[in-house]
Image (cartoon, rainbow, N blue to C red):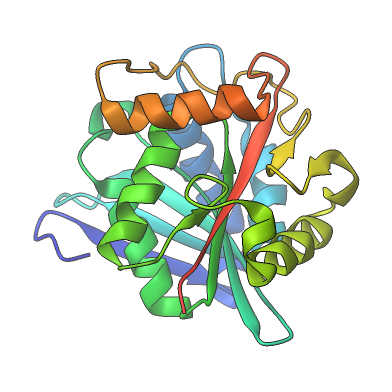
Length: 225
């Protein structure tokens, strides 16, 4: 992971299925800690999610203690190779760039042409924008260019939300998905108004009509190759 203090454990196929009970305990604990008080995630729920996603990366500190995870759905459609991910970092390790390192491991491993996620958290989205800039990606829909300006982005979003079962709930013009999270606001994150990039993302979320308390989220994607 390009950091002497971190390593990555990768689970997919048989290695994930054969260890899913133990892995779901680890992931549930990290998710509960990362999202904060009142957002307890059960191992049973995480087990189903892991089996559905099929790919997991766990970040380990120098003592081999898990500090974050990223699970991803990887699939191909036409000429595009999709990586759709979800990640959580332990509360006391947030802000140290671990999420970005997890994403770099995944993009190196799976070589996607489209990287996508969904979130209602402007800090998470800001991190993705920063990571894509480091990869010299031209932009991230819907934050850097309009949907109707790029046919490839249009089709990639349609394919993605259809694959995930959210086509009928997602506004393809903005990526806004109503009621994406049954928990409503997912996490006790702080929306920092003193950080220009985070503030700009939050302004965009308001413009798109995001209702955070209602569980809305935004699908966003980058065309990386």
